[in-house]
Image (tube, rainbow, N blue to C red; front, side, top):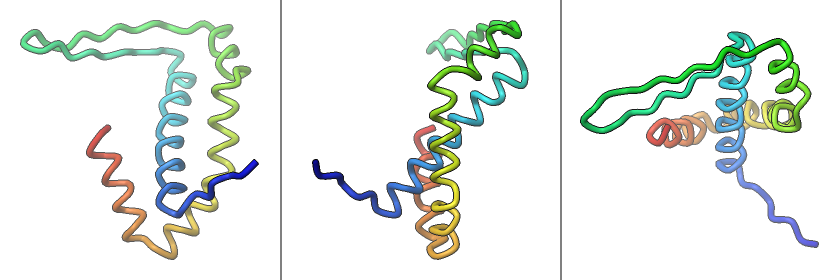
Length: 102
């Protein structure tokens, strides 16, 4: 099996995107509330919220999705920080490209 190698921009991209997702999930856990906001053209914005029980929060914490976010972040963070130290312009360019979409 041959594995492709990631370049620095791809590593930074994965780290920033994963970190943003992890932050969203951690805020949901902290607030015990999940909110979805939908913008409907020519009408306005609709927000739907769900309050989470302790059981819901524990299910998130025990779930593979959350664990994978945490583990991937722990592995990518030190690498991304080294890349930022070495090439801050590239790091900012990748960060800016994500902000254009998100």
